[in-house]
Length: 247
Image (cartoon, rainbow, N blue to C red; front, side):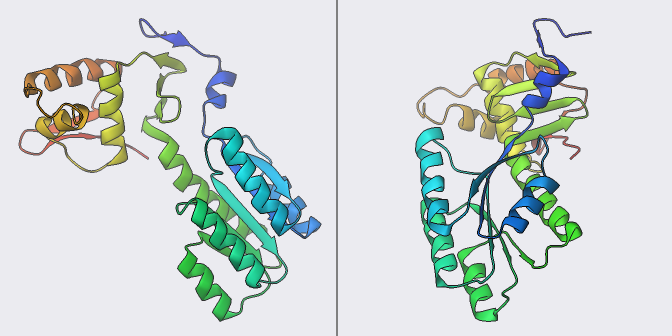
């Protein structure tokens, strides 16, 4: 049964709230492009395609100007790792130093690989592309990205960081602004304990002269716990609060 004061979503709508990995594939090789897109043609990835390196950089910039955010993942598939490929990775990292980049190439010259490692690429797959290698690397990157978008609290209960929604048993449960801040704080530091004072300072960081009321924090957490599965927020008297996250 839906919780009181909840908005019921269909299963299709809940799937739409799952993190969609916005991916730019830059590939000069059609066979590689087909293998990447077809192998991962699921609801988890949304692909934009560029057939040339210069076109890839333009698409990357245009996506940011249009969406106000960066791609979650850039896949660069090229026959040869040359200076132009490395320059493209450098330019993308200049725009967004946290950008995840996956390189696919048959060229494995150590000098170029060291440059790419120093740039901070997220993975490298040697050609010919193995389905197992592709699946393993893509899954690893997907889970890393998902962990920044969705906090899995308990089976059937997640918090969507993008939409600021708590979804429990296919229902969106209303949260106050302070309840959201608490979930995001605990969820971003999954195994760290926070005292009531630390949580108070996080919520009211922009009000440094506000009188501290730890009882108000305890009251917010008490109300928040009623909206979450049992034992979702753990508390140890001397250490404080943390999320009991299962994945």
